[in-house]
Image (tube, rainbow, N blue to C red; front, top):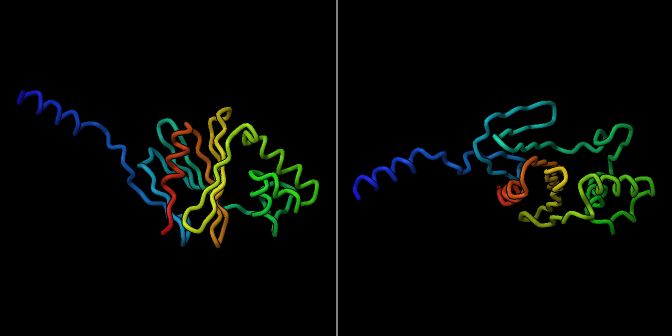
Amino acid sequence: MKGFRALACALLVSLPVLGYSGTLVVSQDLALEYPEPELISHSSNMLILKYHDWVLSHQVVDGESMYSQVDLAGVTGEFIQSIFIPEKRSVLPNWLQLLAEEQGREFGLPEGEVTSQMVGQFELLGTYSKQHRSGYLYVFDRAAIHHIVIQGTEERYQEVINNIRER
């Protein structure tokens, strides 16, 4: 029995730890706890954390460059909300309503479920597309809108949501 306990302890110690090892300060108000990635890359406005079987990316939304040849400055928040909440499209011009509807379809809506929740006083909107095996999140804080993409399982998407917190 003593040998079995020693073997069990040795196995447990040698297993990789799946705990969360870092904190990404997303803004003055928000943070994201994340597990140790295999690779971290930063390019322009995008931060990428690569893991064995999934990828997480974060960028701050820029309404002027979100779509080429479309300037969303002044209506960026309303536009993004209308992707997930069709009732909010009525305040937008017709062509922007169509763009929001098209983007929603690209994200897997209306088939996918919309994630709508508050992180403290900040809104989080998103969805998971089984077809693309990707989750798309937008977090609205008082200074910016953050776009987080999770390429991986729905469980990873939910883990990321559960690890966004107020600072």
